[in-house]
Length: 500
Image (cartoon, rainbow, N blue to C red; front, side, top):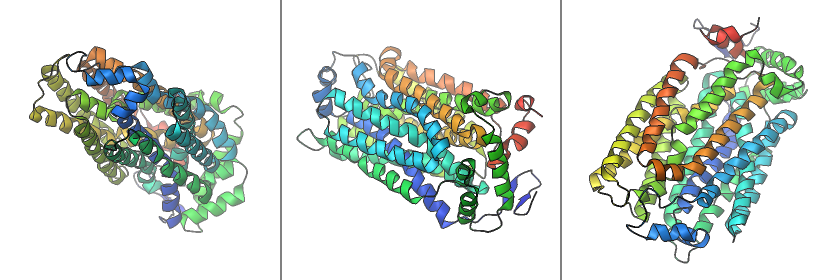
């Protein structure tokens, strides 16, 4: 290999690079897209459990929540329009991401993040000022466009700009910001729920303008990635940015890798058709399956509806929001565990350990609910209620250091440059599709399946454990443009898909 890089005995390539202030600040700015996404996840669950919000927009659901012994404990919140308020954002995001893929490739990662910021600002204004359910849902749809564009651009931006040896940690900044957003939303909900006058939910929604503005300002300040600049024919600018973010002048080897990847990318006229070629199937299959599995762990069902879930278990409204704050804090702290270990222990170890932890915690929750929470009565003592909260926290912790961040990291780092924008688009599309399905169906599933819903999710955890063992390769410390040679061609199963 040319000067500027070396290969270790274990086959890991390390390009010469310092951890520069520019890289750290660029990653922090870009990752605020995750902050916006996370804040929205947290706000949705809290707002939809606020009596003032329910009374104004969902009066039938409000009456059911106030009635005792009439509606099943599991069915109080079963309302398709209430679920549509939450899930409309994800339906819009999965459509928007297909357009975002073209924008990301033609205009670059930076411009795509800027567009996402503008969508977030407009959607926030509509939601905070909305007086009708239709206006609220329109605002949610515009926010969804922002999510589609941000989730398309940010993980790819982070993977391309980060030095190889800390790529995992910096990419997880996106997921870390999602968890921080959820925590902040839960804290805001806790205080706004106490406001008299019935307008607390508006303040909760209005605060989302802060991360929206941060992403927009960040979009103006950061440089685009060298990979994106070279792909769009700006080679000199790409080389200058690469030297700037690496903090060294000797970047020849890494730049050569980018040029090679760009040359192949320019030959591709139809990115989505190219995605279906045999050699792109390994990262495509893994990206799709990881998004499906990520949602079928049940994590977003718990994070969307944590206050609703705790209300169902008999916690009072304040206590339910307080419990949601606890789970949000666990989420943030556990994601920091992933930041530390992902480039040391590797991706596979974190995924497999989490599968065991998630499976056990969901089984315990199902048993407690099955024994103690019946349709029209519940015998959930303080001890058992605390056990459920502990198990929910155990579940959230394991997800937060594994399938949460790695579900975004692995797809963003394994596609070759010519398929990266299209591959990330499919990743976001599948994620949003299954997020939409879970968001739209969870309250109805809980009504019909009752405690069995946790058994349903635990069965999926078993399936994803087997998938990880046999089909997900280790990608730590492998340069992003060398995945074909050093990962896919070395894997016992996927190597048969690699063309000579």
